[in-house]
Amino acid sequence: SPQIVWLRRDLRMADNPALYHAASQGPVVAVYVLDDEAAGSHAYGGASRWWLHHSLESLLKSFGSRNARIILRRGDAVEELAKVAKEVGADTVHANRHYEPWWRKAQGKLAEQLDLQLYDGNYLLPPGAVTTGSGDPYKIYTPFSKAVLEQFPPRDALPEPETLSSPGRWPESDDLAEWNLLPTKPDWATGIADFWEVGESAAHERLDWWAEEVGDYDDGRNLPSSDITSRLSPHLHWGEISPVQIWHRLKDKRSQGWKTFEKELIWRDYAQSVICQFPAYPTESYRDYDERTLWRNPNAGHLIEEDLKAWQHGQTGYPIVDAGMRQLWQTGWMHNRVRMIAASFLVKHLLIDWRHGEQWFWDCLVDADYGNNGVNWQWISGTGVDSNMFSRIMAPLSQSEKFDAAGYIREYVPELADLSDDEIHDPPDEKRGDYPVKIIGHREARERALEAYRKAKG
Ligand code: FAD
Image (cartoon, rainbow, N blue to C red; front, top):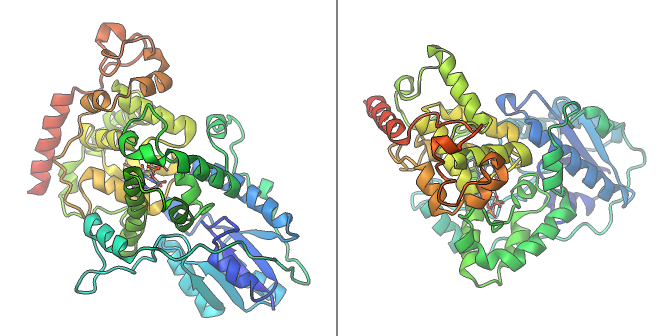
């Protein structure tokens, strides 16, 4: 009988365990359900919707070229899957495990109604595969990563299914264009469209390129002016490629660059393991600070809103922060070093609750990921499970110099393009032209943050 495949963030043909196993058991009816309700504050943001549209479009073509289809439905995932199952006479739904709380809930409900076969497909090791001596999951990255490395190699990658046979009759499907996932007017996504190729084959082309570059990763990954990170993050997030495919493709590169890169892939597994343990992590501080004194009081009026806006729009007067925030807006992505600097600036220099930053990134990033975004925001804000204390404050001006960000600033803050390498990190006021003066001085901000932290700690 027909086998349903429930697609979510696993928009690929190859190394897709749910699709592979379903195809070996009968005709395949793949279903994608767009549910704008279940995820609440984490319904897809603008940049995610843009990516999703193009990724689905690309996968629809791949299915089409094999005389297969993806049924698009909108609404409650469990209800829609149950309807499709009834329409085609299927009892079994195959899906790769997802760990976002709304999807775990849906998996639970679906399993009460249909035979739900779950597979591990999106991480190097399934969350829960490594535990401490006492059998608990790890909370901290370093021991987690050591334990993961001891378990390697990860599973083998699966090929594409050899054939996808069709059910006797196809159920109704929405038309992707009618989902309106793309912006209409103004089209804010033109910069994003110039920056990215979306879909499974684009992900593999990117990996081919990266296989040649990964040797330089160790030295280059902190330099925002150079293109020495993989930029695989949206492809990984949407599951156009799996980390297992990446691992096997690069494993023979015996460079330090590969070793460092492997650890970054493990960060992704780690973030997932954190949200498995603490599902509300992207919305609730883990540490027990008195947050009423830690953050500037939002009821104190417009100042905070203006500061938040200045940060969002890249108008803080700190060139490295503004370059990052404008890169985010224009391309849907930001270099990791700059994500750290910009996030730290919001939380510590401006003392604005990290959740405002998490939500802005959620809306603007094409790789916006419930686990990675939440875990990194709490890591930066010092409110998370690790011991990175609130009192560690990044200095944006010296970071900008140290990591040689002049070229990056010229690209994204063109009004400063004529300044010399010496001046561009911290332009003298008389050379700023239309570019804003600093929203707050570094030393003053630092002292204010330390004081707030002391109070909040009690
Ligand atoms: P590479 O340096 O090439 O790394 C390879 C892959 O490893 C990445 O694609 C990513 O999947 C994973 N990875 C790398 N660094 C991290 C990390 N610190 N945590 C978890 N996984 C990592 N990454 C996201 O994928 N989605 C997010 O929503 C996200 N939000 C972030 C928010 C903040 C405040 C910070 C500081 C970091 C965030 N990151 C997020 C992590 C990191 O910045 C991006 O994964 C990275 O910049 C993506 O570019 P890349 O693919 O070239 O990375």
